[in-house]
Length: 185
Image 1 (cartoon, helix red, strand yellow):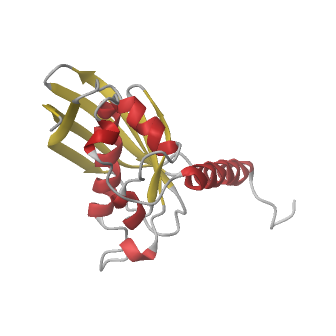
Image 2 (cartoon, one colour):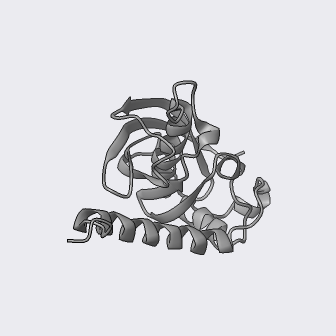
């Protein structure tokens, strides 16, 4: 056996990483510059239609994603997946990725999972976010995905949960959120 040949598990991780890289390139090629949509651009759009317009470059991409190096790579009703690059610029003094970066990525995923289910004219805000950090994340993990899934969305309150995973399937953090529905102004 050749000592430099990757093991099957490493090959699988490399294949997932390559697929995730391709997903990110595809998404970033269509995103518009970061900004905030005008109220008239979103007034008649459901939450899902807003994400469709953002992914098509018809609405501005979200500024926080640009500044914190993450982007949406998949969405459907009740599901939102963001992908991020845990680089050295997000490290804390201990040499791991700052918990605030992880929390921001997971908050985006879980809240947007709820957002995908909203009717036109309804917005939301996070009322509660709980993060459980499972293991340290370092820049040696090239990409992570925050997968937010709807638990329930009513007329006034929505609940979702999320997981932050690496390309090897390791779980780095878990989150739950409660969001309050608000009429858009």
